[in-house]
Amino acid sequence: MSFVSFRATFSRHDLVYIGILAALLFAILPLFLDIFRLNLVGKYLTYAFVALGLVLCWGYGGILSLGQGVFFGLGGYAMAMFLKLEASDPESTKIQSTPGIPDFMDWNQITELPWFWEPFYSLPFALLAIIIVPTLFAYIIGVAMFKRRVGGVYFAIITQAIASILTILIIGQQGYTGGVNGITDLRTLLGWDIRTDSAKYILYYLCCFLLLVCLVLAKLITKSKLGRLLVAMRDSEDRVRFSGYDVANFKIFVFCVGAAFAAIGGAMFTLQVGFMSPSFVGIVPSIEMVIFCAVGGRFSIYGAIYGTLVVNWAKTTFSESFPELWLFAMGALFIGVTMSFPRGLAGLYSSYVEPFILNRWKQLKSKQNLKVSAEQARV
Amino acid sequence: MQAQENQQARKSDARDFVLSVEGLTVSFDGFKAVNDLSFYVEEEEIRVIIGPNGAGKTTVLDLICGKTRSTEGSIKFRGKEITKQKEHQIVHGGIGRKFQNPSIYEDLTVYENLEISFPRGRNVFGALFFKRDDEVDAAVRETAETIFLDDQLDSVAGLLSHGQKQWLEIGMLLIQKPELLMLDEPVAGMSVAERKKTAELLNRITKGRAVIVIEHDMQFVEDIAHRVTVMHQGKVLSEGSMERVKNDEKVIEVYLGH
Image (tube, rainbow over all chains, first blue to last red; front, side, top):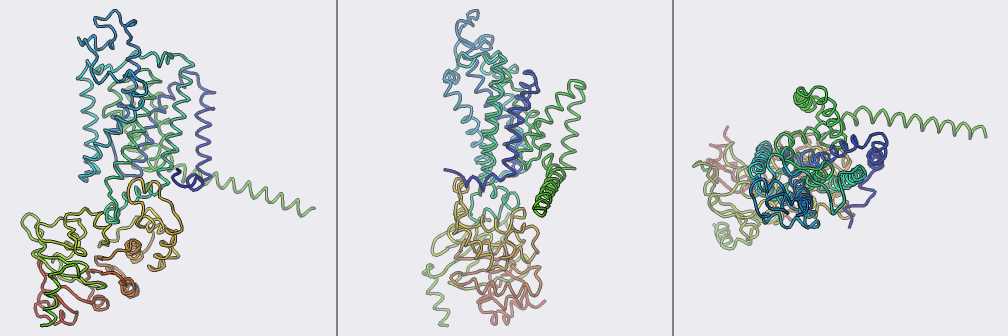
């Protein structure tokens, strides 16, 4: 069943934007970048999943979550747990005192695989867990917060606290989670080596494909009545409530969608980068992801993806030359964007670039029409 | 005397009234904003609540629509107790409420404002799969005409004048076809011409529904009220026709006199 008719959802503009993005991701970048850089882009794109979710939660729903790293991390860890178990077969771990369990467990004097690791031997289970665990967690947070009408700054602070708690938990439970190093040394997926260049290409394309799927889903949501309701809630929550809607349910839904997107990003991160660690779960990465979204434009699903790419490209370039200055630049960027162009790159585009392009297009068309009519006159 | 007996007889069978409020009390940290309040609204009645600032008028509406929870007492809508219901359930039951400041969705168009208020697809998946079909379109256009905004359907609501925003919010309630409509100062900040139009609008829309209005503008109250309830310090000071209330000494002393 379709949300609404295809044509009503995707205007010609949307098709052009999606086409340009697809061309950039699937053709232009792979043609011009070597595999090392392309893998890096693939890594950035995993953050774009989070930024896309934030457009829905924050831009549309007005729910600022400073803890999206939690969902990114949970998705990433679920993937990493499967890969780690595959990498820890008794053969390759025979020097351990307990062969067949992940190396970090052995280092922490754990002699038996913990019960919650067991199901991660199964790939279907792991794939389900990637989506379901973070979404369920988001659902629980959502019910606990939104049903009690916690919102705004309070919600942001609580999500930040949750990000912090989860990081501390992961680091503290070293034997079960790999601690501060995370889960490293991941090698194969069902026997397929994910570290080779060809695997990196395939994973990059998979990542782009999934991102476009999420983009289309996000577009469908924003174009449905639910999308308009989110905007309405941002304008006047009480009016929505007293028009017969249970406002909390809509917030929970969009928060869960954001979490599911982030989780897919996290899993793709683990696959492409080859490890997962608590440094992608905590407060700093969570806020960074909000910055990606803000720079790109929190009301634009396309902007979020470009914003993520631009900020990360800048981060890599700057931090290669001035590592100690980067954090300050990032802070300044965030303040600058929110104060002087709150609609981000997408806003700049729609107020300056787009009118220019449309004008040019019109001029071209009218010139052509003139030519045609002149010729007709001659005939 | 006879009338009073009638009233007494009716009270025993609350189902006769659209709304019956009995012994309603709400206290905020010991301060009783509404204190042992009782009143009854009949079918197709326009009831106006007046009273000095702080009398508890808006609080009564808040209590009925579930925004504020009562400490004691009962509110029955068509004989059914609603004090424990959630806000959206009360709306589904058929009570619509307009706020004092026009609350509309400024970033959406007039059409979208009305469409969102159309009573269908009110849960998450219903909203996700909601389709703008002919029934919705007809309802939106009909309502827009009623509230004098049929030529503004594609305007962004934030750009409407203050009076038009008030009408739009009334329209957003109308499209839900509530059986009881509650309006909090619907003509505040309106021009004289707009007030007249609003009075006409209210008289037109009471067909088949009861309306409770809070208003300060006495001319407007005279124009529309079937019955008036005067509130003072959380209690009913006087109740009856406008004529009766106007000549009530207690009312003149606390409200109309100055």
